[in-house]
Length: 116
Image (cartoon, rainbow, N blue to C red; front, side, top):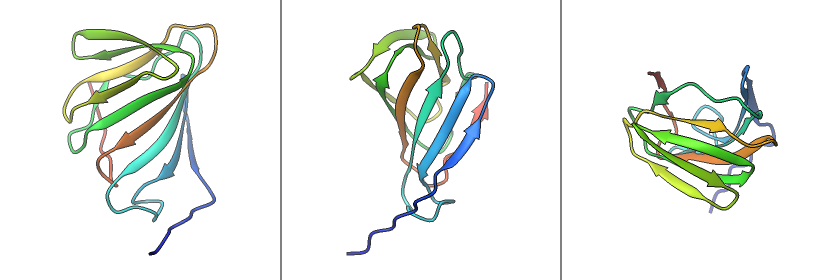
């Protein structure tokens, strides 16, 4: 068995919060998936987008978000999980008073993002 450990995460800072990448092809520790954490500040949201090459699973660790997928919206809190199919336009809006934190996992080591 071979285990790949990359001690340094890649952090992307945005006006709405940040993405912390822990597993991916570019990090060199997976050939099949991407895993990270997303942090969204209160009242903020990430831009609507889609992933043409992979499914996404989002699991809320802390806070309250309204997640949109297409025209549907769902309120999510700690412990809630959603599966977003490839090609679905979506985003998360922090509707709570605290920073929202969630784990995001993708079915590709080279996740692609297309803005709406």
